[in-house]
Length: 637
Image (tube, rainbow, N blue to C red):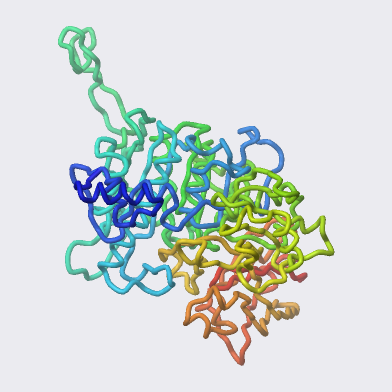
């Protein structure tokens, strides 16, 4: 505690009189544990505050969208996870360890984490308001804290014998290295791996060409998995055989009975910390790995990492999933996997890769053959952005559990004056309105008066929370006050109530260009899908299939938009259209992507055409607006 005598007496006086301690005293009473050296910058939060959700980000429940492969696979009841949502919220959900889908299955069991975060170039950092950061200094400190929060949470959810690999380029690697030393400890740095890509040819540059990235390998403790990884030599090499000499107590060259050196031929060597792996496998259309996704990483790069620091059956996580290479490689190396990303393109790209994994290369075979297996069962789910209809269609007990997690309610039934309360939120009594049981009743003035009369003055000067579908609440206000008790309405879909939260809720914005899919953005709070209204017509003849979009009407509430976004209309709110041109009626497998910038709006309409020979019996379209809301429709061809 860093208090002088005068400050100490002041704090004691406040406590004795039941008064709050000023915010300024937080770091004096609970000082940050100083490292030998550390990076100091504006906005740096204490680890304890991040874990306590003081940064405004908090755990939210997972909503299952679809299960691929209902039967138990090689890992028993375990199913791999593909998550759409903010990775900090997801990490906090894992840390809380209360969500039914992952409870006691993930926290403390993740053996390897690989992250390839955006590199925070001048062009790609967005502030929480959706605008470009106003200066390099602001951008730099925001980015570093953005990464640090996630590193802190990653360490908390990893297995004690787990490893973390952080992939960076030259722009921010030196800053993040200092942060990694703070979070994981300098002694737990295993390697700095240099990935050199010799096939990246650059034109005129004012200096040396930038042909490498760095990957920092940290362990959580000194007990971690470290396997030998062998890589092929360009050509076989003959070397003298080395053996241990008990007499000389060292390795010596082996000799035959005539004293001649014994030679061995080697076709591979043990990998060191400089890896020459070309990028062409991810940039050339003729490559079997190519999926046309920016920042896609070569499978060989990820293969070496997973072989080095994990074993078969281990759980692998990538929470900046991008193109999904970590999940695709983990699947074929017999590892379990979890992947998370805030981008819709990432989500649907990974779903397609897993559905088509049998066509990928078999990574356990030295021969160049296909994997030819279906993926192990996996679940797609959303976190922080939910389907209203799915929520309201849940069975009552499941609905009750879901909304209690959504609003952080501790389920603890109690009866006060004949009124049944379902639990506590922030220590205050909470009712989860049984809207199915009382189909003909709403939360109106009479309903509140009945509760107020029954509980008397027990909660005078306090508050009561009521969770209910929005359409069953007759009040337009956030709360009503009766006899000194405030009744707060937590409506579904929920609109942010300022005095209940530390930060305004914010959706992740979806890009209107493929060049912007790696912008740094994050979600605060949670929201519900507001599907845009689309007017679409399909026409077909013997040669072509054309889709004309006559209208695109974004339904995101104005309260969730920035000042500039409130002026956007029609196709200006469109992020992208994803298409499966051979939809099988079961699983959407993305074949075509049209971002806003790829589309020509003529006379207020957009037209997309295909050769009829390239499409199947059905086409499925997924329309995404810039707020992440989506609408799906299927056409018979």
